[in-house]
Each structure stands twice: as structure tokens, then as C-alpha cells.
Length: 496
Image (cartoon, rainbow, N blue to C red; front, side):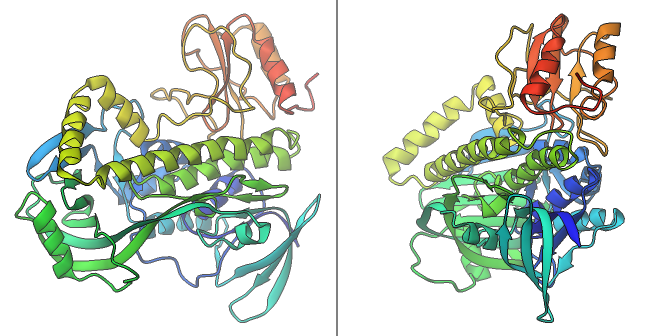
């Protein structure tokens, strides 16, 4: 039997991809070679923009109910505070970092899929595939050893850093492995001076980062220099020694849940698409854990691709340029994340007493400026992500105010997010009149039937199903919308 989409990999990114595609009515199968979901905490943070996007599928509230909200980030040197960032002033329905172990994120997304009739097929491995102009023939190996041939219209590789899909496409994973070694410890901590916030210590001997998980359980991450090829599990005593040395003092670690060593890889493919095959998440990009951006970037890959694939598969829009825009848009974001997390890691690992002293002094001055704190908070929460150079942006037109094409559209209180529901529709923000209403009625499979109030008087905005602005112009140029939709290959049976 042929399916619309095969999703290979059932981590957070693959699960989010299946959630999005299912709600748009596509026939999806999702497989993972692991017999069980992870029981490790792994990726801990869900940022504001990710939660906004998951709101549209109706699955964010379960995540919020299970997690813990964090509204502050401290950067310290011993007991001295260098900077304090607050997250609860960013303009979003989710002005916080949601701390939730990856095991719980996967469980809740998995349960959401089950409620909607999709069962993750575990112990099933994609071993090979052959893509043609109209389908992808996939070979699946089941746990008992039997093989299955599956025909899919599209294949999406969400199968992690060692992606089978990426390897078989022959895509180079460009980048490096950083020389420093790190330890990770999920432990119970007592004696923290800043309870309930993310703490980052810049110490002369290295970085120490502490993330709250739940109550007195925390994630501790620290670099330990060049430890060669040592892959042994770190001890609680080693973790305690680092806390004593780099922390503000009086922190006690106990009852470890997970201890591990790791090295940081910074790698990315050049292209996220090859015809009917796509890459998303760690299969396409991996980077430093600084800022907790990895899982969020992958989930946002899913939210970017799913609506485009749905419009194409349902015959509402032509494949190009919609599908090609996925790689162009998300590759640019992946590059930005790699650069930003790499810079943050390099700053934290800066050596030399004079350099460190200058770093701390400059950081204290810069973060003392309110505009800088606001900008950094928007970057961390990923609200600043946009697509300024997207091929889906309309040509620059006069508009009486933001958002510009490619920018995230504001989410107004008591207004449902654009793209919610079972159909990926564009939304028109304009002053309603008979002519505009008649125009909207000609695009029932493309535009929301209800015209939303404009963001500013005298303006007109077209917002994509993922909440990013496609077109911004003046209120009297609503026919620009029709021109735009034709240019990107979207049409409806009643359009001219």
C-alpha cells in the first residue's frame, strides 16, 4: 500500500513532523529502528517559538503541563553576577523556557499521535530507498528480520546525526568535531543560590552550566579539557569537584540519574532536499548544546516543511517553489544557529586571565543595556528567527509598519494562531470590505475565509500557515495577494 509520507526516525523531530502531517490529512507512517523511546533526558528546553508553532497542532498544552517554566538566565563568575537575562518580557504567549526532559517530550508527542490514529512503528528500520520522479520505494526491515517494500510519495529523514537517509543521498556532513571534552550529569542539587533559573558560570578553568529539570533535579554540563579518547562514565565525585571549583560554593550533588561524556560536533549539510527526499533535525544539522537550540531547530524544520508538503500533496499548490524554499529557508537558519552556538561556546571556553577579565567586563557592560537584553532574549527564545531572503517573500512593497515579508507575524491575545486546524491556510490581515471578501472567497483552499484585523491602520498583510509574513503592502492593494499566490504556484478551483 502506498502512503503519502514515510518519516524515518521517531525522536522529537520525527514525531513533530508526523503530528503536523497527520493534522493536515496526509497518510503518514513513522518508523524507528530503536525498540523503545529514549529514557534519557537529552534535550531539555522547549523555547517560545517552538511552543507557538506546536500550539497550532493542539499539542503544546500537554507539554507545558508536564514541564517547568524558567524565566531567567544568569551568567556568573563565582559568586559575582556578570549578567541576568529575563525571558518573561518577550512578546509571546509563552514568555519562558519550558524545561522538559526529551523522554517526556517524546512520550507526549507519541501519545498525541496515538490519539489521532498513528502508531509509531518501533523496531522497524529503513535500510534503503530508491527515489524516482513520482515516488520513493523504501525497504523496511522489521525486528523479526522480514523485509517490506513500501511506496511513499515523499520520504523525510529525521533519523539523527548518523542518518541512513543522509548517507544514502551521499550528502556531506560538513563541519568539525571540537577538541574539548565535556561531561553531562543529571543529578539532584542542593544549595543553589539562584533556584529555578538557568545558571552559566564562566570560570578560569572552564564552563559550568546548570539547567533546572524538576524540583531539585538539574542538568550539569561542563568542559573538562582534552581527555583523549576517554568514554568512561564520569563519577559523582568528579561532578562535585567541578561544582566546588567553578560554582559559587555550597552546591551539593547527589542521586545521579544520568552521567555521560561527550564531544561537540558542529556539522551541517548544504542542501536539505533531493527531489522527493528531505532531511530534518540532526540528520541535517548538529551543533553545540549552548543555548539548547538543537531540538527546537529540528522541530521548526518540521513545522516549515509540513504545510508546504501538504499543499503540494493535496494538489492545491505546485511543487515549486514551495518545496525548494524549505531547504533555502531552513539551511539559512541552521547556519545561523551553528554560528551563534559556536560563538557562545568559544566565548565560554576563552582562556587566559587577561582575556577572561576583559570578556567578563565587556559582557557586564553590554548586558547592562536594556536593548541588548531584549535582543538577546528574542534570539534565545527563537522569536527573532525569520526568512528575510526567502523565495516565498513578496517583493518589497510600501507598508505602514511591521511585520515585513519574512518576519514572524505577531500573535495577538485571544486570536487563534495562523495555521491552526486541519488545513494549511494563509491568513489575510486587512480592513474588510466587499471586494476583499469576494476575492478571499475565490481561494477556499488557500486563504482563511475570515479576514483578520490589520496589524496597523492602512496596511495589508498575507501571513503563511507557519505564522511568517509572506506579503506586506497597503490596504488598497489587495489584488497583490492574487499575483503573489500565482507566483508561488498556489491556486484554487475557483481562482482566475
